[in-house]
Image 1 (cartoon, one colour):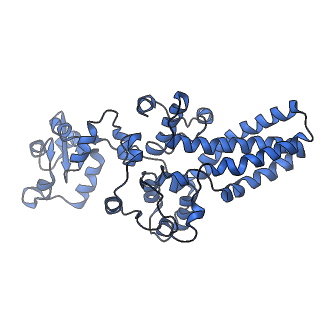
Image 2 (cartoon, rainbow, N blue to C red; image 1 turned 180 degrees about the horizontal axis):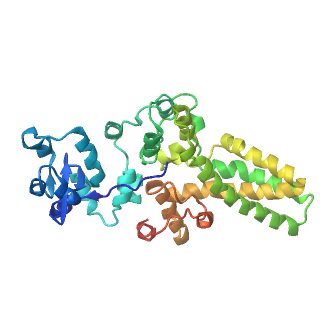
Length: 366
C-alpha cells in the first residue's frame, strides 16, 4: 500500500478567496473543501446556485430538498473534487507558527518536530480515531481488533506521545520485558564484541583483523537498511489480519505509534539474539572461523552504534552533523515513513532511491 499524499489544510480566508467563476470552492460540514470550478456548467441546478455559495459552506443548501435534492451518488461524486480540509480554530492558530508543515500535519497529526514531545490527549485521540486507548494495555487491543490493514497502517504511523513513563503494552508480568533502557545495549554487547575480537585475534594479525572488522561494520549498515525497510516496514506485504498487526506492532509499530518512549527505542537483548543468530550461522558457514568472528564482531559493533544513535536522535542535544541526521530521522516518523530508512547514515537511502530530501528548515528548529 503506497502512502497517499494528504490533502492540504486550508484556512477560512483561503476558502473565502475562491469565490469567483474562475476559481470556485465550497465546503461541506465546515470541514471538507471542494474545487467545483470545472463542474459549474455541468451542475443540474445551474452555475449561479453554486456561485452563490462560492467560498462558503454549502452543507445546508445541498441538504435542502426543496431547492435541489441531491442523491447519494452526488455526494460520492463530489469527493473527486476534494482539494483541502478546512482548519479548525485550534489548527488555524497552528498555521501561524513559523515552520508549520501542513502536509506533515495532515498525514500524522504532528505539525513540527517540536510537537513530538507534547503529551497526547488520550481520551480525545480515542474518540477521534477509534484506534487504541492509551489508558489500557495496547497489545490485546491490536490482537483482538477488527481493523483493516489500511486503517491500521494509517493510524500506527500517526505519532502519539505518552508523556512521562511508558504506555502499557501487556499490562501484566510481561510488561518489564517490553522495556529496554538504552544503556543496556552497550553494557550487554560491548563485552561480547571484545571477547569475539580476542578470539579472532588468536588466528589473525592486527593488519588482517582491523580491515575485516571494518568490513563487518560496513556490512551492518546495509543490514540495518534492509531490516528497517524490508522487515520493520513490510507494510505492502503485511497480511490483512489482526495477528499480523500484533506482530508488526511489537516489532516496530509501537515505535512509530509512540516514537518518544525512551524504553522502547532500542532492541531488547532477547529479540536481538533471535535476529542476530542466523547471521552468526551464515558468517561461519561462508568464512573460516577467525575471519568470520572478526567480520561478525564488526557487524555487532555497528549494531551497538545504531541502537545508541537511534536513542540519541530522539532524546539528545546533538552537534551539527548529527542534528541534521536527527531531523532526517524524525521526518521518517512524522512526514513520510515510506522513505528515510537509514538511521546511522543516509548512504543506502541514496543508493536505493529512498532518501528524504529538504529537511533544512526543520534542522534549524531542532
